[in-house]
Length: 490
Image (tube, rainbow, N blue to C red; front, side):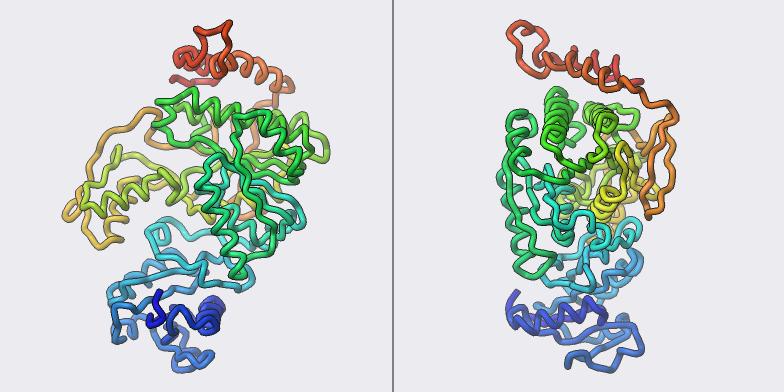
């Protein structure tokens, strides 16, 4: 941003005032021309010598704007509906550049920073209003601890790391096998710390592959992590249908390696991230996560009183890599068409920051052997989401931008469920966190059953010169998964 930029801060509350003070102190981001606010007690006054103008709807139309003028919405507690209204007002008022500060769950004790702002996008306006989570309170159990995040360069893993900066952890380990993605989140976290966001945890990037069992033991023995958030997985459903053994090898055997290393190295708390696609799975990805859930809960049965293994299950998140929102955005930018698989396809959607805040909360309040579900609200028709995104970019669906239906892909179903028939979601004392109660008695021999399964899968995934006909045999894998997972057909 050039120094000549003129900035209008929307909202004269704590977040807006914090941003204005930072901009004035650094004197390199431009000039704060005014606050825009709807509070009659503030309109007409000045805060730190900056005038407060309003009401927003009236004054936004009257301002004489230049091409470099920018609006920053600094109301972190604003509802989705109000943000949509503000966005429309500012856009119609001639602002070409509109940014937003994070939701209230990401702002700690009023400490909003300019580096946290970003361009407003559809995920800020779609879906329900996120739950308000006091991160500092939620993360108290991590203070002074060594925390490791697997898949730290991914959509969920990277956001967990951003929020973990506020937890007072002594060390934050970023584990992943993609050099570039780990480099990017490492760099971002260090820049956030330089700008005063969060607390001064020591950040340590770690390159490693879950499939390398010996390396997992080597890493955990040396890092001495207290808590692990396991987000790493191959997640793209159609791609995993084309590469089923890779899904089992990475997701299941990678998790086996990690859990075994966790038990060997004395990690106190293990939080596994799972998916609604693990419920009555119809895809290889869902099957791999179904088995991972069983594996984590089996490990909990054998855990000591000092150790906890738990899983947190939720549905789709808005804007994750490989999800439909980035795809729709690119299709709209090209003039369409926007492709939807089926007019009746539904999915739950939650913002990544809200999902991660709830995961971190569940990780602290969860019990050993607990399977938790995030309350996702009501499912959304994908075609409705497509229409809303088209309108966000200023076009009319099926007039300016066409919507085409392409048919469901392998491994997909029209809607998902967050729990199975033999599971019952029980409310907890915590907002939007449910605990799953299994109506069937937990099998004390589940670990033996899993070991038997693993032994049968092993020659399919790993090369054995004595079992060449089994190695990488997709048909054998499908047959075995169909036998061990109720109702599964691959």
